[in-house]
Length: 74
Image 1: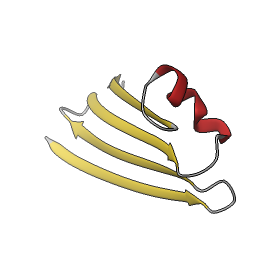
Image 2: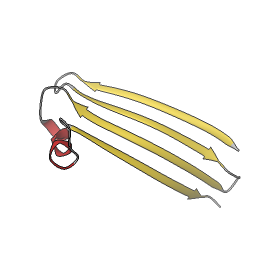
Image 3: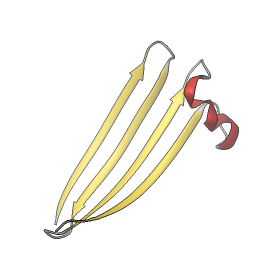
Image 4: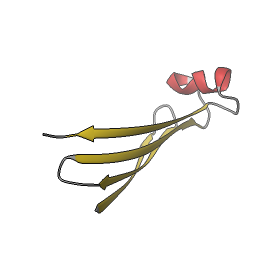
């Protein structure tokens, strides 16, 4: 199979927040693709849209999401 890694970093200077994504896709066959993605959202000084992590996920203004996807193509 083929492996395709992906790493993304985005910064918003107005609300001083970051978004990081680490993702790996694995082409198992011509019809089946597996993808594992982990997203990290975090802010340095403002509550902004990231504040939900501080209420439910613990830590200071951050949120983590992990997604596993299986894609069947025909």
